[in-house]
Image 1 (cartoon, rainbow, N blue to C red):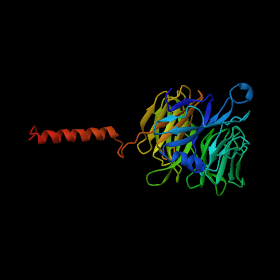
Image 2: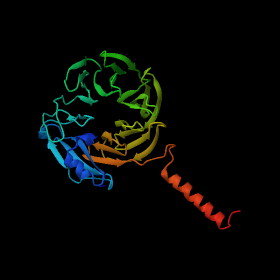
Image 3: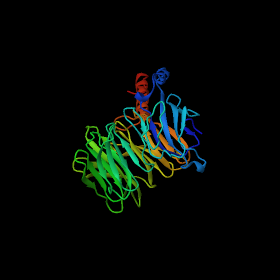
Length: 347
């Protein structure tokens, strides 16, 4: 197995790079030598203890200079019968939140239902349940400011806008846009034909305008729909894959989108052109369950039900989308022409 892909004996459902401001001083000093090490946290397990597959949070080193995950976890935190199926990492490094009433060096836990979708933007915590209930709390006071028992038949995914003014939820029926200040549904994201929404994610474009991405499944496969966050109308829709989309994320700088499929494939797209720039076929043997970009957008962590965790380095491209290899080829051709001219082969 490749160094950037490891199996830790746990079916994984969640992944995130650990914020550098969450690391202890000893960890920072350890990494300061080459600046290439990152911590990645993976969450999963087999459910109740009698299944024989332990529930755990696994913390691993990723060394970008060698493109490798550590062979063994640097920490593995057993969670008993509590399956960490949902996970949210505080952007300020204050903690990871899931269904575990535990604490350890890097993380603080809050008790949440196991079926809750969780989203934390630093000052607000949102949860959406399989029973269709949507709630938003102030963080860290946990004051309830939005309570919608019938937001959807079942909440599949949710996300806060970068300015913290809106929350979007998707599930059964159309997507819904919630105004945080008034605690009401402001607008709906309508579906076309037989679409089924799966994931939603806010981002910002090159002009620093907010945009919203929603994945949609139709009979021809998975698409990504881009929405205007002022009118809440569609901007565009791009068909990406034939297989169902099982994981989705957007890089912090908004330049990249990542899609994982039930076949274990990963696609990385340029958000401006919506063109696929990297494909990793069979990145995992099982379906991709989670995707997470590093803070510098140079690496993508992914997990699968096959108990594998992977980090894929992202190759840089030029602004116009041409690869570095094309630029090198142009330089080489120019050098050949210059040599031919100086040697008299060309007049």
